[in-house]
Image (tube, rainbow, N blue to C red; front, side, top):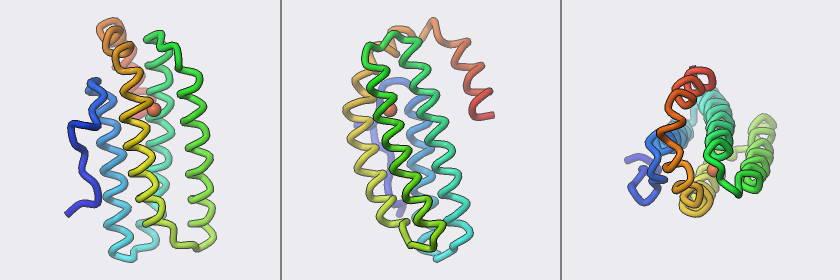
Length: 147
Ligand SMILES: [Fe+2]
């Protein structure tokens, strides 16, 4: 049983974004598995991957919103920045030997669910409308950001 499963209520109607949200959920499930196995080096590795991937995803989403002419792009970006700063505090605690996995997973699940269902679904119509024009940018940027 995984800790958290993606479900259609979390869809923003944009495949490339849904795919990235699913990957974040996969990371959270990997963190759960590493935590249950009490594998500290695996926890460190997954945590780093989760944080790096989330930062890259936010940056991709911010560029996409901006290109789509979404009027609340700036405030959405600030929400991302505040959340990243918050996550970095967890990473620091982990580096100091504090067991943060469960609290982090639970907070990520609550925060992401709210964020996707409110902030992300709000930009959805703008991004969907501009999607045809963005295809070549999306292809290039995915390669550049995610390899
Ligand atoms: Fe977002």
